[in-house]
Amino acid sequence: MKPRVGLVVLCLVLSACQGSNPYVASSNPIPPAPPQAANTFDRSAYPAPQRDYGRYRNWAWLNGRLPTGSAWADSAQIAEAVSNGLDQRGLRPLHDNRPADLWVSADVHLEKRLRQVQDDYGYGGYGNGYGMYNTVPVVRTYEVNVVVVRVDLFDASSGQPVWSASAETSSQGSLSERSDALREAVEKAMSAYPPS
Image (cartoon, rainbow, N blue to C red; front, side, top):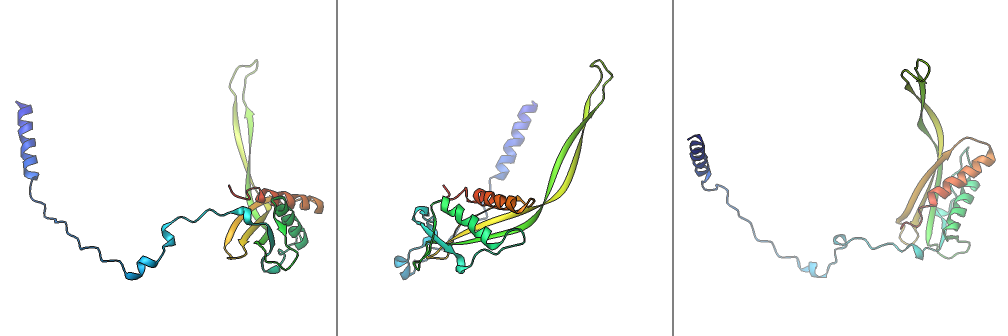
C-alpha cells in the first residue's frame, strides 16, 4: 500500500510542475556586416605563423651598446661570453654596415636566493640490534647570492622580441672562476635556442 501512495504523490508533484513557461525566447536579427568588412582581413582570427629561426644569420648589439658591466663582471667579459654563445648557435656578429637580422641585449645582475639543506640525525637502540631507531630532520635555511644572466633577441626589421632566456650561477670564486661561471650560465641560457 505504501509504494502505491508514494507513486500517487510523485505523480501529483510532477503534474503540478507542468505549467506554462513564463519566459519566452526572443532575439533581434543580426545586423548586416559593414561594407568595408568584405575587404578587411582580420589577423586576430588566425594563429600567428611559425617563426623561421633559420633566416636569422647575423646579429648586432641593441642600440649599438655593449651590455652594462658590474662589479662581478665587466662589459667586455659579458659581451665575449654572449658572443661565443651566439656563435655556437650559428649566429655571427655583424662587422660591416649591412643591416643585422637580430638585435641582442644582455644583462647580468646579482640576486639573493634562499637555500635549504636537510640533515637527518639518528638516535635510539638498546644494543645487539634490538630497540628502535628514528631520525630527526634538521633543516637549515641560508641566503646565497647568485648571478643571473639574461639574453634577449629582437627581430631587427620589426623590433619585436624573438627569444629570451635567463640562467643563474654562483657568485663566489676568483676572477677566472667567475669568468668560467659566466660562460656556463650563458651556455645554459642559450641551450634552448632555437626553440623547437
